Each structure stands twice: as C-alpha cells, then as structure tokens.
Amino acid sequence: MTYPVHTKATAPERARPLLAQVERAFGFLPNLAGMLAEAPPVLEGYLGVAGAFAKSSLTPAEQQVVLLASSVENECHYCVAAHSTIALGAGLDRDAVDALRSGTPLADSRLEALRRYTRDVVARRGWTADSLPAFLAAGFSRAQALEVILGVAQKTISNYANHLAATPVDEPFQGEVWEASAR
Image (cartoon, rainbow, N blue to C red; front, side, top):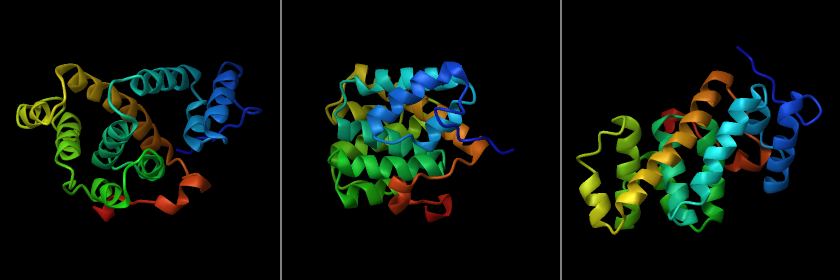
C-alpha cells in the first residue's frame, strides 16, 4: 500500500500546524512527518513522545544511541538513515555510528551498555534481566532505564509506520542510506 507524503498544502487541516512546527525544527519537512500527517493523531502522538524523550536526562548523543539502536533492531531503513545523520551532529563519531548501524559493540563501554540495554528492550519486549545490571553498573539510573523505554516507544511508532508506508529517505539523509541486509 502506498501512503502519500503530505506537504503543508495537502495535509489534513489538523496536521498542518504540526507540519509547520516540524519544518521549523528541521529546516525542511521530513518525509516521515509528511507521511504521518495522513493520520493527524498519529503525527501528534509521535511528536509528543519525541518531545518528551528529548527532555529526558540522557544526553543528546545517548538519545541518538537509543533511537539508532532501536531503528537498527527494528530494521527501519528510513530511521537508520535519519538518525545516523543526526547522531553525527549530536557528537557521536563515525566509528560509533558505524557500530550502531551494524549492531556491533561500541568502543565506549558506557554507550555499549546503553546500546545493549536498548536492543534488549526492543528484541526481548522489555525483558532486560540480562542487560539491565550492566546498564546500571555503567552509571545509568533506574529512571534512565524507563527513559530508554520512552525512546523505544518513539521509534516503534516511526519504525512501524515506515515499514507500512515504505517512506522514501529524504535528501539530507541520503548519505546514510541503510538496508537491513547491511547487518
């Protein structure tokens, strides 16, 4: 099934102010937002969850580890490309981004504990007894364990919607195009 990628002009009325907000934040209108505009409550919910996660106690780089690790685990071509680009701008180095994209261990032990915990939240549906102790031992808190779940919720919305819609990757993210077979 094909989903339209709406513009502010073609989107349902309720989605138009949300798209304007996204465009201001990014400097362009990402295809993900244009596609989610088909269902304004979904776009609104996604932006609300994303906004809450952005306010978490995780650093911007740590947030990107969560978002990228979730997207890799969920095999989302769009979000891996987008968050690879964003992660590089948030302070993660190329080696860390490449490790996240390939699902291999990160050199930084703290970020690796975060990646493993995030992966387990996604792959094991929240059953994290194997990775939670290392996550906490790496200096993360119990509150941050819950914040990771919030980030995973954000990515679950966008990853699954992108699977449904086969959202085309935006030009600003083209340099980081990824396919699940790359793992």
